[in-house]
Length: 174
Length: 458
Figure 1 (cartoon, one colour):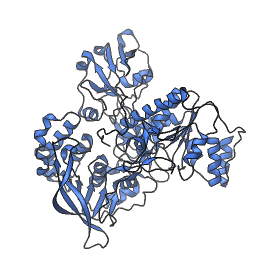
Figure 2: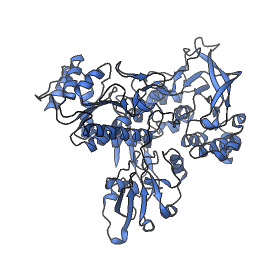
Figure 3: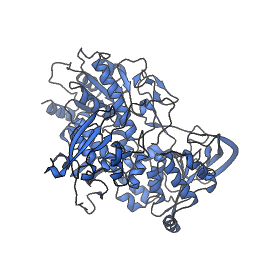
Figure 4: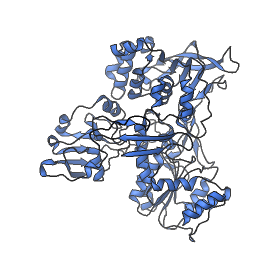
């Protein structure tokens, strides 16, 4: 998918060509002037719209919203947890579109499934340092790819009810 | 039809004409001032939860997205992906983007209150704090915010012309903006070439003589405001070595066990870089021609003129500080009474952004630079709300602004649904606003850009 972003008026017209990948696989980022590098997997949420081809592919997950309401969802092997949530209109944002540049897909991985996930990369850990309401079981949703082992995975969306306004709280980085 | 007549009008420079006879519209009419992340996220929430609401987003610049467009460093383009989310919001038929319109200058708050059921102020903090010390008006003392605008193409900053003929730059402040400007000054030109940095900045930087960038902060390493990802980038920067003052790190390692995440990993990395650098860093630093020099416990007391270039900064007189009380992340400092001078030819001031009241009717706390509000409701002005940095103060990354904007959206949604905002009587919204604007002068970029967004060709 090719996206063009106009940045400003007569100055700085920029063209981005960006191929997205899921999880920990490479990201090819380039401008029109340079060589294209095309990744073998191309995902930006379209894959998650495909139905499982068979029951063997199905991975059931449960999203729990910040109020405790549960949303059982039928995912499949290879689904990105964040894009799957988007497909089903679960309230998980993904500002940077799974490119490890924000924390808006932050979730808590409940129960033992946490230990079945691949360890977070340094990049993900660096970002988690910035996530509000960080917990031991915090992960970025866009880095979780479903497989059969994760059948029954339960993830919870963090609370967002703290008063964000100036009340003497500690300043955050910017 | 209206668009065609609009296009002709713009071309002729005549006021816009409207074919609609009714100037009132059904459903809640909401106006957002400031088209950055706060404005777009609150709009996203309102159009999702209020099926008949119309939201008009006004923006001073001709183009939307605020700091996402003009504040993010050119080598961090993934951070800008959120523009796609915002564009989708702008393409909703109930959302209109109106650029090139300035609150206070082109439309007053009172006018907006009359035309809309709710007015949401999310125009951020576009000015920066100054130090208020002697010599601040010398040449070559610039705001880091403007330097960022210069290399990012922000209208108004293109002629900044920073003097890069000096070999030493002092960046005052230790947040991520300070790190960004240091990185742009120290990065190899080939690295910058592959980014979307503006052409004029790339050209100026290719001729830059800058070799050393000091990053000067009042407090200690434990209180540093930058974040770990940006620090890592500097430590690994090609052709650049990182030079720390080991004395600055007294007591830090002893403090480490008591530090919780998120501060812990950052402090560990800083201490490692200063006291026990990795072999691979040291190897790279051996041949580095440029240097990144964080300096802690120094507070600028005065700018001193250069002896060779009249009227230009030549050095900074720094007061030596020390922390008082128990070491903690929020510890304060006091001056020791000692001073030191450091030579430099360019100063970039990066000590924080500052908001300003765009309209005289906005109740404003000039000390903190925020609109006086209670959880987003502007004091004394029913139907007027504020969010993002304008309401919380200028700190926080996208996730914080998003959370704040959604919270504000929920508040406004509730106020409309429970009648706190009376949206039963129709309000004219943009239909009237456009007439006011047209009476002030023709030839605006606003409608053209709105069309551009709707077509999806950003």
